[in-house]
Every structure is written in C-alpha cells, then in structure tokens.
Length: 264
Picture (cartoon, rainbow, N blue to C red):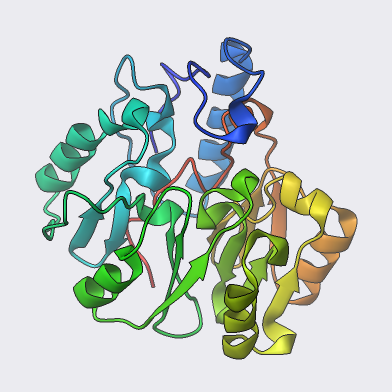
C-alpha cells in the first residue's frame, strides 16, 4: 500500500474524476485509508511504498504491476499523468528482489488493475480496451506460463478489470456483466460454473463492489447491498464494508489501493 499523503483529484483520466478536481477531503481520505489498512492488517502483513509529491494516483498500488512468485510485470501507463509513477514502482520491485521481465514500450499495461489470478485454477483473467491494450493478454500468458482469459471492457466507468470482476477463493467469480462485450461475457459463462458466478447489480457495480480485496474468505469492499452481502455469505465469505468515498472520487476503492505480493 501507499499512504495518501499526496492524494487528490488533480486531473481527469476517467469518468469518476469529472467534477471532482480539488474536491477531495484530505483528512477523511486519510481516515478511510487508515481504516482499510488496519482492517487488512488483521489478516495480512502490510508493506508500505513511499508516496511521491506530484503523483496523486500512486496511492492506487494495484497499478504498480502484476506479481506472481518472484516475477513482477511493471505497469506501462496509458495516461501521461501516471507515467511518472513507473520509475518508483520499478525501484521498489528491484530493491525487493523481484525479477522484471522486458515489456514492449508501445504496449500499455496497467498491472493488477487489468490482470487477476483465478482462485480456483491456474488461469489469469486479463482485461483490455481502455487502459491496457492488446497484445498485453498474450504477453502476460507467455511471461507467467499460465492460460489467460482475455476480456474486453466496453463501459468507460469500469476502465480496469478490477473495477468489475473479482476472482474469489474456491473458483467463485464476482462480476458485472454489462462491463464486458458479448464475447467476453460468453467466455466467462463458458469457464465459470453457474453455481460459482456471483453477478452484481448496477447499483452494486457503481459502488465498486467488485473492487474488493479477498483474504482467506474475508472480502473488504467499499459498499455492497444486503442482497449481495447475503450471496457472499451463502457462498462462505465474510463481507466487510470499509467506506472509501474519497477514493471513489478518483475512480478507485479497496482493490485499487492494494497490491498482493504473495498469492496462494
């Protein structure tokens, strides 16, 4: 995680940011971030990355890269406003012993925002369309030697895969179908058993319910309806609501604010 010392909405690079420039409450943002960190720290060790002035979105560490084992694929950001983060993420990965495979300069890829490990089989779900571009799914497949399910994002409000799809322990998949094109929706249906699919409503999707952190069946999320929470409990999970309204103004919630460094 990266503390929100310099967090604010200082530019507009996604629909959530419109109308929110200069409107974040720094005190509340810090309280919300601290609450998420404290909740996660009960179940996981938290490692902190030093925040950098002039890089307000660095708090969203999911976009640092994709990590699996000793390999970390560094993000290559589409938006110029975020490209300054890359050198800091690179330095951290290198200092902590991760191997960084080469990546084509002309291919945009935004890390664990657009590449998620399935929790039931050795598959990677990879989103593309708004930030990450083709052929990033194929490159991820080659680097990690795991089959990749490429999903095309079509709704700009869900510009990263982790805003609309969340793989859960035991092969469950929480997702928002309307964020994907028809072919991608079919790919999900063909690869996830009906009883393992947890489809979220429009309202839950807008609350970034899918932008959740799952740790040993505890699911940390910005918001979720009583119905969705009931579905999760029926599947054996414990939803924990951690409000993150200030970060929603920038288009991010719990998952965006974290990067898992160790996966089961």
